[in-house]
Image (cartoon, rainbow, N blue to C red; front, side):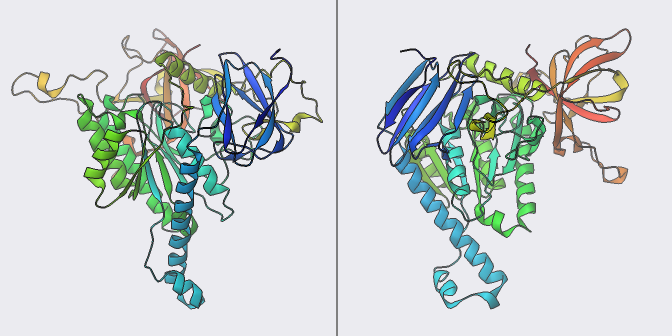
Length: 500
């Protein structure tokens, strides 16, 4: 069978079509008949949904469907064994929590408008909205569960806007790797590429600003590994929590919608030197987001541990791991980081499957990428030469820090893990060449309100790359998605490097 020609797959109820793409290939899936969804986001009839950049996903149907598939997947098959019933039951339980939480808030806030039925429904006492922490080992499908539960909530027709909290810096969520963020989600997140597995931020969106672009609030951690600087990550997690609760003070519907926290696989590691720091980071999440439900994906030992530690105050639920989860290696993750950074600077460069007719001005709406009509997704980044003094660049803590036990007897550390250090680009060992930097919000203009570590609590406003450094002339070349002045701006460098 030629992969260039469209072919049909017929799915029975409660089954799914799974596929995996190789580098440089793409796939188009069209719903011909029935009902289908991808990680909880419903597919429209007659539309070609495009997948690319090594995407690995599944199309599920509750009632049965017929799909037309065009392209060259490296793996494709139909599975009748899925955990979707368990995930659906979770959604139903969380939906009941949201409804009850909103009802109680309205009764207490506007008691004069409450009906007898409202009061009867609220007679069991107040209910908290679901605030969910998802834990699991590497390649267990945590992000898939996160996205599915968010999509089901937004499709419920109740106006929910749950918070998506991503504390996995190796993934970056809707921003870039190295960031952690929180984003209100009011519409389904469509899957098209692993470079945007949790949606696309408006600042990284194509030039036409898609209607479903997200508005995350993010902080720059700067590394892929949580053990690199756990004290910094702990602080940034708590910053996210403070922002969420401040917003919910005036957002009743949003507060009742709750939140879902996607975590790194290191939170599931139960042995080795990382054990202490991962326990403290789990506790930071539980405290900052006031977690009341912990979902453990396919890990019996971790489930027992969470039951023992938090089971008295928090509902801990073990959920099954999907058989469609794919094992991912370090090289794959490195390529995804490259895709994410290039997408931020250059937009999306998508080659449609050979068997799919090239879109015209009238047919473009029939081809969807991340739920949006196909269009030119490319950007023209700006490469600008700036003097060293225009941009203030910082690094948090020492680049390589020996453990306290390795210090001489009686010695104390001069630089703490969270101390901001000003980087001098004129120094040959500055480590800025080809580095990804986060531009952060301006510090408080009132000097009396400033404090030593204020830079740690400033959110991200954009990203740049230092593409060359001219030490003799004290200037550097900066790559940015658009041309803008960097005079007086503040940036933080981490350990992510730009890859051509």
